[in-house]
Amino acid sequence: MKPAPVAYRRPESLDEALADLAELGDRARPLAGGQSLVPLLALRLAQPEVLVGLERVAELRGADLDGDRLEIRAMTREAELERSAALPPLLGAALGHVGHFQIRSRGTVGGSLAHMDPAAEWPALALLLDATLTVASARRGRRRLPAASFILGPLTTALEPDELLEAVTMARPDGRFGFAEVERRSGDFALVGAGCHRGRVVVFAAGPRPQRLPGVEAFLRDGGAPGPELQRRAHAEIEARDDLHASAAYRRQVGARLVDQVVAAAS
Amino acid sequence: MICRLTVNGTPWEGDVPPRLTLADLLRDHLQLTGTHLGCEQGVCGACTVLCDGEAVRSCLMLAVQADGRSLTTVEGLDADPDAAALRDALVAGRGLQCGFCTPGFLLSALALRRADPPVDPARVPELLAGNICRCTGYGPIVAAVRAWLG
Ligand SMILES: Cc1cc2nc3c(=O)[nH]c(=O)nc-3n(C[C@H](O)[C@H](O)[C@H](O)COP(=O)(O)OP(=O)(O)OC[C@H]3O[C@@H](n4cnc5c(N)ncnc54)[C@H](O)[C@@H]3O)c2cc1C
Ligand code: FES
Ligand code: FES
Image (cartoon, rainbow over all chains, first blue to last red; front, top):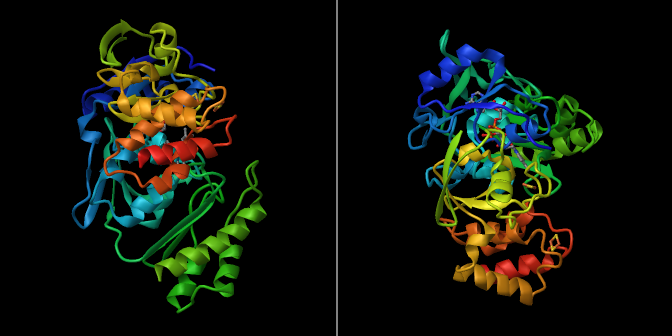
């Protein structure tokens, strides 16, 4: 199908973009790389009156990857990050799983976080790395949210219709890590995935949103190691859903194995 | 909305409705029907074109988003020696039957060949997973692209 008629605005600055959203409210939708929104428009699952194209907003472009704190602005494309020599290996490992390379040429970090597909890698990374999301609006200024408060549920975040995600910041991930997922073909959304870094453990694509596993983390703090007991605890803790791609039981079982693998890789 | 592009080296300017996808602009307004549409939701890769040298899905880009960009479609590869070598390799290795997927594979493979840093030929099966072929079973395409990448 083809998208329904829609108007297009192309703000040249962040203030202009925020003013457009303040004026239009939920009649407008920001458009980043379009790799999720354009299919929704074509299927007419989204029918905004106005698209606010963010491609000219300079303040949303680029990433600072050199210091101890990383800042990735919303319109940074995944392909740009992949080409950067300063990209930490954990982010590189996860990025390779985000769609196909032709999707990563256009898809942005901000679009992926704002879209909040439960199977997407970026929300899971944000939770794993305890990232802070900076969100801006014309009326209320800026607010900074930890990933755990930004991510609410499937296709749902703390963003209000007049807000834009500006950037995501996090301490540079270093040292050992694990990141693994099971997908049908390379580039497909994960059926279930897991990550581990500095004692934090996250499972994604299993339930409605990426999930930390505090029970498994406590087990590790108390000296627990990969093996049947860790898998049993992960299995009991993972929130999983059924859908046409996989059953909840499959996701829990495979998820527990992946948790074991990523913990082993990170320790 | 006014949109200015360069398509296969030739500047183009026109007034396009914002809902028009780049694929539909190329096919229906510029008559460049070598860009094929399979799924129109980013999954099959048949519509892949180069945008400022990078492989993109033309079904997932609005024409207005391509304003100011330089595009290459399969029609723009006639004088390209790399593309000619790949076409020959695909033909010799039986890497196509109906040919519906071929423009997407050609442009995806060209983007891989020109990638910086260069791609490891061992990753070709994984990297070509974003292009669907219903005829060949992939083996001949993967073999031809891998050999051509060297
Ligand atoms: C075939 C295919 C396979 C894919 N596989 C994967 C995968 O395996 N893993 C994965 O993670 N993703 C996958 N994706 C999705 C892809 O990563 C998308 O690019 C991403 O989800 C959205 O980013 P975008 O820049 O394209 O955003 P858009 O599609 O432009 O926007 C997505 C949503 O975010 C909103 N938005 C965008 N930017 C902002 C902002 N700065 N502030 C507020 N709201 C904003 C938009 O209004 C829209 O609601 C796949 C996509 C396709 C087509
Ligand atoms: S038509 Fe664009 S990816 Fe299938
Ligand atoms: S040759 Fe027919 S789809 Fe690939």
